[in-house]
Image (spheres, rainbow, N blue to C red):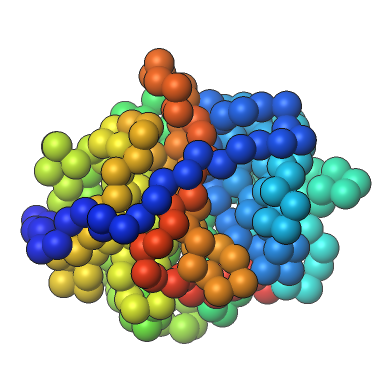
Length: 301
């Protein structure tokens, strides 16, 4: 469906550019993969091009950084084991931070050397859902995978130019996934056994909205989407109506996640690559949306 608007701007919100005391880098070339860790009481995100993991401790406000030996699209927490599962250009890997280690799990696309991991999520059953894309962002060689607890993977969809933003609806009925290059948000009927229904188009972004990038869900069932190229984030109802929009002082908005003890602090990543703007690549906090996020599941393997 083509998205429509009701209410747009949230007048009461405050957009804060988050300082990075303790970090060597004040912004990201391509910030992505923002993750709230209740266990660490910290926000984690990556710089894909800068090959770096960032962690913001919410108690102290300090930011720590870890260089990674490959392009990295995301890190997701593990339930049973220490550390994280990561999506690298070379494939899936396990990562620990203190001390740092990066151990390959496997490469799902050895025949596609120009592909890399781009975005991912964990479902309530503890599986990872992750998309890939061609480095040029144009060739439709990207795929969508499910990583199961035994560290085996299954291709569930294909033909993406820029696979992005998988997220599950608050009622677990739908799995949303995007192709940013096409301006489309897809959805699949989701089953707890890990099977998906047919892919259908949920939203078509008009050109003035930029491209749909990372996504998150609030506890009221709203779907929040980062707009690459349009300097904003938006909230959508289940019928595709855009209910809210928040403008940000950077054009290339990439991802977002609710964080904090009450899941009411909304953090947003952006990119500096290819733009000349003071806030490009900054991490932002949007205060006063009136919404809360959903708990972040951990990978069961």
